[in-house]
Image 1: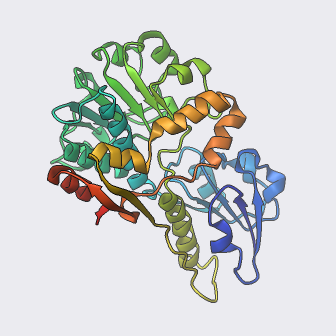
Image 2: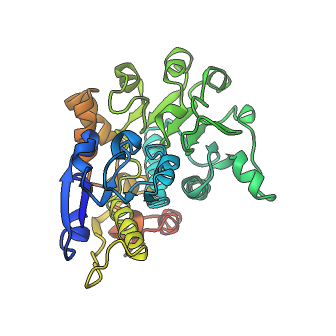
Length: 369
């Protein structure tokens, strides 16, 4: 069996490199071509690879595994028509994205731009990721409004407010997939009218898909808002003016905790085992990484702890000052981003915290000793 995989997927060698009677070939996912997979049996990719007829027609690929949660890079209809099985690791990065949101809030709170307590937030898209975001924002003290009409149609007890009612908010965070069809398309959902009805200095955070926001409208009429952007239109060739005007800017890494990356690959591995695509002689088990942070008996608050774990402003500073907005810089920083651990895998030692802050950090999933 021949497996072709994106060379920038961590742990891919550990999970697939030692399987019996299997050849693992690693290729750059951004530039993957049909010739690279012509005689492959399986393809394992990230969101940077568009998987459709152009890539896979007249190849021997029988299974596609995507280690990320989104589906917009997969032409699932064509794959099914072609008889190619596929699996996406949906939900693998939900925790990582929700904790990235907490890091953004901590950074904004620490600089006085946003006060988490008694502020009003709106969450657009309340699925796997958005549900965790709502929970964490409420822990931080926000009053939260939710918008997810698709979920409201499925669940009679779910209260979804329309985007028309999303005004006078302090913080708006987007967690929808990118869709252009159906009753509730999300392409350019955040457009001129929506931006104009927001109050000055409200915060717009997007960690879903770049084109959910109309970047031309953002640049034209959204200047009164603070932009916190992890996803961008036309990645990796993003607009320099949007990058430089953003309050917080990161290169599509909100879901890139070490644990989320490993979880996504592990989900693909188990799916291939369950579908009898691979039959390893012994089960592959790779321990998840952990981290211990000591504050050496220093008095700190919850914001300092969260930002010690990950401060998105550091990524932004590296990107803006050292790398710029060119496509190679975007991919270089994204591919080499390996500095975030999820809260559940972190132990905090010797931190002098108030009882309130210690309780909050424990509720967020951290171990305090």
